[in-house]
Length: 169
Image (spheres, rainbow, N blue to C red):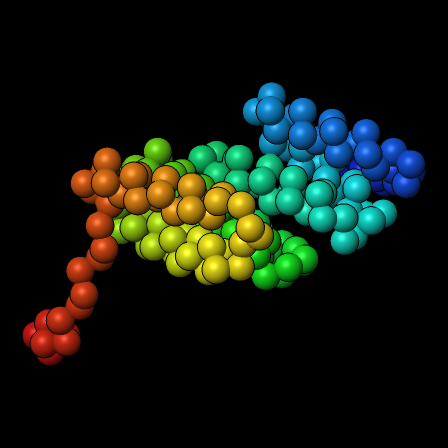
């Protein structure tokens, strides 16, 4: 008979600030699963905490190389972010990090997958650029990073379009 898993213990509202700092520290220590766990605890008691949502999203993207299916989980958080700029910027960041993980993993079709993710990231960053607060060039910096990644990796290219006549053979 399997053992029973204990119930999670809730955080106190007063502990949210120090828990957010701890989550940031775990991200810096390259321990995204620890940061993710802390953010989930925070969101259990403050479901719309924007800093926890962003940290959770970033922690998930930190693990893309090890957990290829994380992009859908991260993208599911985007609608919960406040403001069109944040939603566009972080959607772009997710796609950019997805592309970088695809490049580092390699494998069959990696160049087409990376191109698709980078193309989407760049569209999101262009959208964010039009919504950005004055003096905030983050979306431009990320857009340029995508262009440089494409330029430095000749294998990153658009998938060839299917010729309808090929389907008739």
